[in-house]
Length: 441
Image (cartoon, rainbow, N blue to C red; front, side):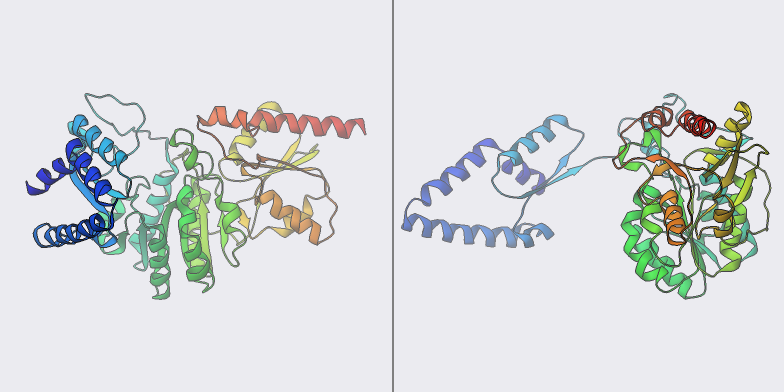
């Protein structure tokens, strides 16, 4: 009550006007300045003796609050008060998450953190699709499968239990599950410590938030060659999540770090094999990137692995004139487009972005290569491939499709793909252009 009363006084126009007039008048003469200094010391001592000391007072910051953030009139009055001040002030505003919508007020799992349109009377309903589920769900289920058979696997998340679909793991293996809050840096260092102690950590982190933990991956994990698996969730363009959440930087950030393996599965079965490869090899820090899209649910698990760095020739045409290299969701999308349009191309699944499959690179160098990516061109797989060919003096005809050197705006993925000229139609046009040039020559 005292706090609220004093906050009201501080926000009073008459109080602040009187305070400013008092300061201005006394500062106009030496005697007045001495009186002001004395009265200020008295005031500060009274505040310290009578009022609850706040951490902000140690920095000589004024503190106003708490203010009811749901009382618009009071909130505007507080904001107008602090706006008129000529010094720093902390405005403490109290709000209730989901205020005014009972289902959101009672939510404790983050269901209403970021939602698409939903039925207000029923609330957010989990979509049931037996054929497809999210990449996050797919990866989480296989990690859970491995945890049921192996006691050394543990899971870390920086406050994204629901977003990364880790609810079942936290429920079934609470002693091996760690939510560190919004602290990606700490999450990565914790992974390093657990790995150093003989555990095998799986850390799920959104691509757009990964850069917060770059230093920890570089120095605490990679420099020490610590085995672990880092799931880069929401890789690529993320549509409605917004311009700041596009996961298009992680390849360029991670690729230069020595010893880190970067993987990108085309489907659920391949994802399971890549996860197994990281776990059973335990020879490197592994990073596996996957998108916000849905993936076909195989309803089963495999214990198979894939040879480190081995690519896959997923389509080989007898009359192939061009090699298309791509990874992740794009592999099956390109395959479908090629088969529907009867395109004479070979399609290579670059499921290991690092290390490269050098045998495959030399095998496909005799035909024009299109590297099709829906991430930034700078620091991309295409740039890594180009460097290999240049260093080994291999003459090759290469074309690149990817996002140019700028930030991508907000929008749905279909619109953004067209806007950025990275759609399947753009790839098809590039193939036709190269075909035309080859026939002309």
